[in-house]
Image 1 (tube, one colour):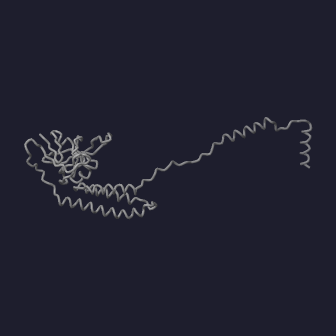
Image 2 (image 1 turned 45 degrees about the horizontal axis):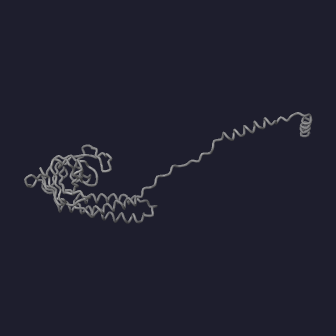
Image 3 (image 1 turned 90 degrees about the vertical axis):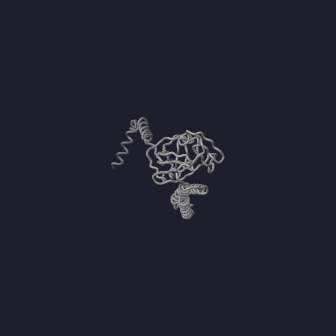
Length: 268
């Protein structure tokens, strides 16, 4: 009864020409509000993670260190050379032990660790044997011809630069090392291995310009005495770094220099 009454009332209302309550304006307003509500919704953001850095190839790095150790051992002539070779083998072993089990080189890395340990032991024995077989000479200066401050034998050349034997004395002992007679170097440089071998204590830092033109900071220390070819210096300040010792002009700069094929003469 109520349902039919509602329907008839609706019919009468339309028949009498009354406008519907739902107008075009209200529809467009509703549509506009709907559109606005849709436009107001922020776009969905997709979370992205930054690209991960490429993993270090410790296997390849270890092989490179081992190759360097072999090269040093093949030309080693002193305790310092063998100590440097041993340090490279230690680095190669440490890197090889870091190869993850997920690496395709893992099995080979395990084998090479044992192989490198054998090479390390051999290099350490050679360093010890070299100390026992070749005790450091007395630092007393030999007699020299008149007008000469030093006669320095050339052991070999490296990249055209003479390599000479230099004896260093420190608080930890006395040893002889091969060093480059580099006339372009203003100061003397020894390697960390050389400093440790003779007991050079670090007392500060200095700035040095290297081959590529950049300036680096290096630790400095003092050796009690330095001798080569009859020339002796005491309380020498040295920089510590690099992989090869350099004899600078602070040692021989006051002398005239004559470099021959087998000998360097320093003239007073």
